[in-house]
Image: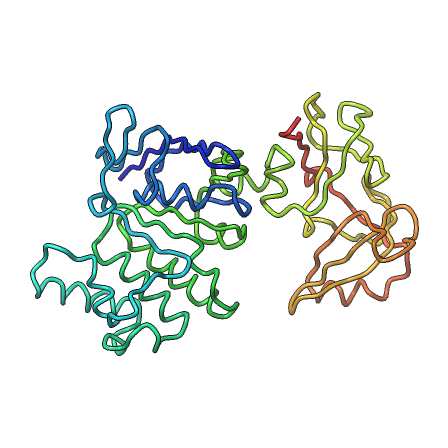
Length: 358
């Protein structure tokens, strides 16, 4: 199995330029709103036509601007799960799933449909219509319909975006289970880092139509390289830097001096640290330990986000330098400590970044 994409498409705001090779496992396409994620999928599916370039699936040319080849969607062997599911309201669940099974005998269509209904835990819903289903059930029907023709590549465009938190979790587990037995390739579009991280082994990060990072997910997370990629992969803390020595910087926006594990290069303009990687020792005997005052907090059911002012007490609720995230068990031991606390920014956790716009 292989998918080779190298396309450009002129859009009103920018020119989309995407190139990647996919040979196995699911590829997550990550980026902010309007970055070109969905347009990339639509070009692969044949719903949109690139301005130029090539798309080759298992050595079959789907699109080649130079050769004048542009296969219609129905001939591409591509399954597409849309954000809004796009089920046909006048067809039953079974009929929706069977819709893409052209050229097969009635018995073969029935067998394929029954198999998909069972795999998606929909066996008792085959005669219902989309309006009679919950959002989660509709999503499973749409996934079954996309998989029924046994496509060579499955395109998933933010498939959980319309669902509540509980359903998202349940259907994400269903999707991961389904993909483990799916023989084809998968492109999974999301703006949610954690979602893409759980589903995919490799990531392609887009910003304003350009690929700004590509590779194994943990490598991108640990070494984002640019400020843009750090932000798109969830880094909430970053500061401009002034180099002091080979492995020492002044973080201008945090007003503190830090040692780094990696040498500072001329291209480095910023330092970052992820919120969950800030530690709170009881003493200040390690380098990169800075006095910190708690400005305010916000919480989720399991975690606390702590907004911290370094070096001096805050003047108001907007006066903070860093966001730290801790589990509530850790918070129980922290909240009664006298201030200032000590915030430890471990040198190996610091991200040395360059501003890709410069």
